Every structure is written in C-alpha cells, then in structure tokens.
Image 1 (cartoon, rainbow, N blue to C red):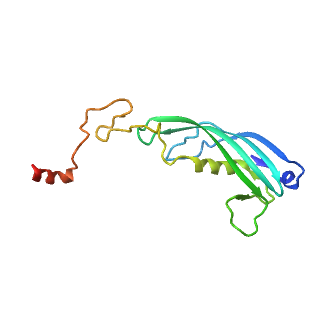
Image 2 (image 1 turned 180 degrees about the vertical axis):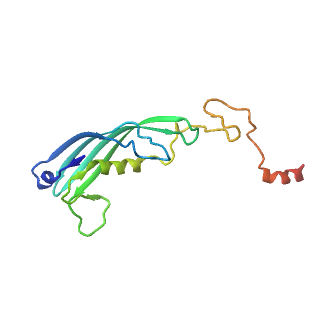
Image 3 (image 1 turned 90 degrees about the horizontal axis):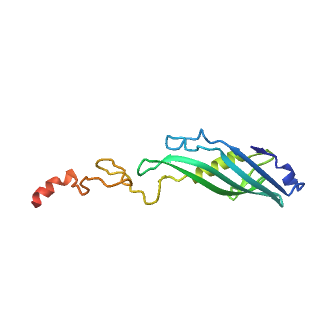
Length: 164
C-alpha cells in the first residue's frame, strides 16, 4: 500500500487514517508458511513540525508447529507499531526515525519488517508445554509414557561397573 505523504509534510492535512490488508503467505519461517490470514492494518499518520508520526495496529493468524511437542498451533496476534517519519536526516544514522524522502511510503514493506522482527524465535503451544519423551517420542502433554526416565549415559557405563 503506497501512501503519498506530501500533504502531511506540507501541513495541508493534519491526519490521515488508513485501513487495509496485505498478504504475507509467501513468507517462510523455519521451512513453513505460518501466516494463514491476511495482515489487517489500521494506521493513523499525524503531521508534526516537519515529521509524521505513524501509529499502526496489525492483527493476523499465525499457524506453526510447536518447537517442543510438534503439535500444530494457531495464534491470533495483534501488534502496535510506531514510527517517526522524516523527509531526510542530516548525514546521521538514527534508528528513531525512518527516512522516506519524497517517495510515497510503502506501508506494507515497513510493517512486514516490523512483523518479522516480532516473530518469536521459539514457538511453543503453551508456556508449560512438556514436549516429547526423548526415548519413545510420545507427546507428554497428552499423557505419560512407561519409559525409564533416568538412563545412564552409555559413555559412563564403564564407571558404573567400577562402582558395582
């Protein structure tokens, strides 16, 4: 979604509200395509003394396998992103501002980057997920298995024989 910011920078308009959606279905995370719904965006752009304040709310469905138990899990996420947009920076690097120049703002691309940075590095179905049994592979959230949990490392078996 391209947004022309000229009137906001010039002070001809004070506020611009935008509502739209875009797809991230082609985005790959850990070999999967977890974005199962379009990204719904409600954005408000407000001009302030040569800069524009962007407040954007996004919501979407995210489906991924749990990193502990491998069960497919779907979550609804909502995020709020805030950026300060300026036409130019005075030869300095500043992460507090997004330099847009005279070009229209590609809101989808800016928000796509924000969303990717919000993705958890480890995705779990719940904080108390018990994962899989390391011996038989049973999902421990669904019950207990009869495997012996306390096994001796085979590399240390010779030491156990010395103790016996």
